[in-house]
Image (tube, rainbow, N blue to C red; front, side, top):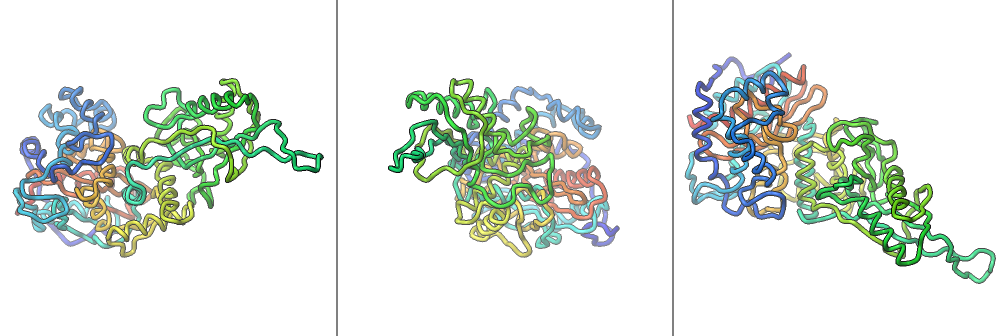
Length: 520
């Protein structure tokens, strides 16, 4: 098999003092992007660090997260390399979303207080790593300075390849661009207009048992948990619906449910799969048949019917007889009863990025389609994502989207497009896109990177979105380099012979971006 980006023999450069390099990076990593870059509302503080992560990092007191030390031998070795490195977990890279060198603003030019890495310096270290046979036969790579938008390194950067779950970077940017970070989705109940009387010949209305419709608003995070946290609660909707019905002296209803907001096929083209539920506008707890809230799980066959059944049981507990639910479309003149609103879109994008949540991704793709006047389907979502990216000026040669999650094999995106998306999300002129960055997993700390620390050199300094399909491995995100600059990177590999070696090779690339100064 031909090595990825084969360029002939090269000398593999190594760094001999990673702890020293961490010390340098820690000293300067707080000065990276323009002041005020994190201004959008959301669950993060003014430095760009998510509040929960900051609290967790402080609570660690120099200890690495248990998930890192328990996951693999590689991670255990990294955890043992010392407290000096451990204290950097999630701190430096998160601070890196806050401020820029004096006189420099992200997405603008300006005098650079810290010199840029050079193409030759990056080629010297990244080149040999890109030729690792573990990275397969085809690839696309790019490294960009976030503050200036300048491309520092490319290898096949404009080649559009299978992105796998790095597709979610595009989905998040498109959704936030189309709807804004404060947008919320509404799940509601309505009473259908009373039916016409039967047999009296005068059109007299029958005031018998009314029809109550549970109307899905496409909220992928609706939950029936007793403690819903920030997410919209089906229990709350049942309680407020029951109270409103009692005020109308209604004690029994015929329950219907409406998931018509989304259209087209519900099952993803990959078929029934534990990584994703059938995509409907009405679902509770992502159609999971267990108590999990992320990752693979057995899913119910009909999420909308399942949500209605759960709702019926909750109404019964509140004293409203509902019976067995059935599908129906809410009438335009239906009478509003109650509603719950989702967490802001910013929070949904963060959750999607951190957990690589396919259910959220597909719902947001459809919501983006609806917000831009398209059909809320797989095809409409893909077209909407591409349309938003085109409007934002993202290079789209060979780029296409057939879903929002990256689970399918019809998507194509280049490293150049991914790094452009990342720099857009960091641009202080576009604070609405910031959740794409703040939601990304941090190496050795959170989400899908919690157990991937790349021999310790990336821990706390790399924030990235992972991607995995059979024969496809990708990684795209940001890293604070040894001189304190925030860099965006994207590495896509196709034809990879095995998952674990490919992931290790990608982690080494990200760690090298973080640990090298690459000025010569």
